[in-house]
Image (cartoon, rainbow, N blue to C red; front, top):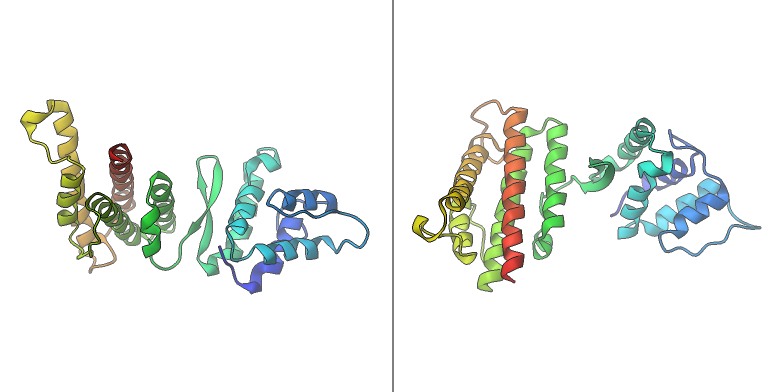
Length: 266
């Protein structure tokens, strides 16, 4: 995670409790906090001002995974006695600083996670690490777009995620690289075959067949919805929040199911 140098000092002061809504943290406790992330500092004579020390730690962590861990752990509600209103205020303060670099703290269950909301929805190199955690992170990005009323963008992202997972499945099972031509239905047909999901009704129990047939319906619906409501095409009707949530939630379920099958096949 990398943020602009323009906000590192502001972020350092915020964590130290010198600005924003975060409580004041003493020098010794500040050292203890940052040492949790691999630093080995000792508070004592000659120690710099609290905000300067905090800023130095942010600068040293900038551009590394450690910065993400620092921010996520800092706003853990347990640090603030479960005061969710206070946590929300701190999260808002941090998000105001990091949003220009394409990041946001987004609530996931009872805690907050850093989400990358800038640029392409899925970076090409990320496809190689697709798994349950990957899908969850991408869905968080979709949900962020829904929360900011970018419904068309969320639908497009859901389709892009689906395409990435299908391509990953095909490449892993067939041991070959394929180029995405944008036809998600073709990808689905090929992925089904790779995972041996293209079974006939007489080969499996009716209730299992009905669920698998529902996956076909999901893919077809996602393709149609993204073609008509996604931001990759001219929007042919006014997209609503429930359309976006339907696309995102159904895509999450589908992708999670497919990855589970892939893991079992391995």
